[in-house]
Image (cartoon, rainbow, N blue to C red; front, side, top):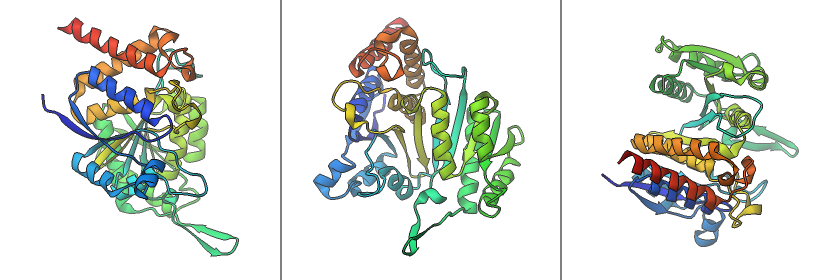
Length: 342
């Protein structure tokens, strides 16, 4: 079996703990991986003077795949977001966030199965800002035909590959008729190439209301960068929060799979962190590198662990277990499954 070489960015706060858990689980699943591990964020600043050293970018470009733990981003001051720099520097234009109900995680809705696809490289979220005069700041919203078309194609190709039935574009074209209007027109043009997939659109504020009334009416949501950032977190809240959903940033130069929650420094080193979000992201990574059987077995093991009772779930999702309890239970479930199939 060929060995995969993957860049590993443990991050900070609880990042190293949840990353170590996921690495152990992937090993228990029998996937041969050589990990190239690097510091990013505050630790990289103290060691190298740069929160995102060039050697990290070089590694991702070589390996084409990275697994990334959470990294603290200073608020208001300090270095810019590592996530934004990675996406822009590597042109990881598609942010993918599957949102699915999980066993024994109590929420207001059941059987949710959404996918949020977010354009990752432009729009207001790019942070193109300047001070016009003292007390007046201007932020630039950039929408291009190229970026809008390729993210629409990504959404429809994902729908085709995963047997999804519908893609809904989300916009504010009733007010921003040129920028959001361009995004919507590109979506409609691309949709003509996928006649077997339904295509419709929603104004973003109405979409948010509809999501909290009945999220099951939607399938794939396609959004610009800023709307996508907000709606993807809203959607995560429908299934238990950021601690249970996967995240991926994908482009032609590679793909980074990451936990979308924060670094939670207040519980770092206490064996309380929930590895589930990063593990769900690792399942997407395994699918991406062609390890479909391992991805299926890890996903099935997650479902079994969550359904088995509170002793292996962490406290944030209603359990009484620790990080190491969850990790050990996952590995034992995977080993039992392997023995049963021998």
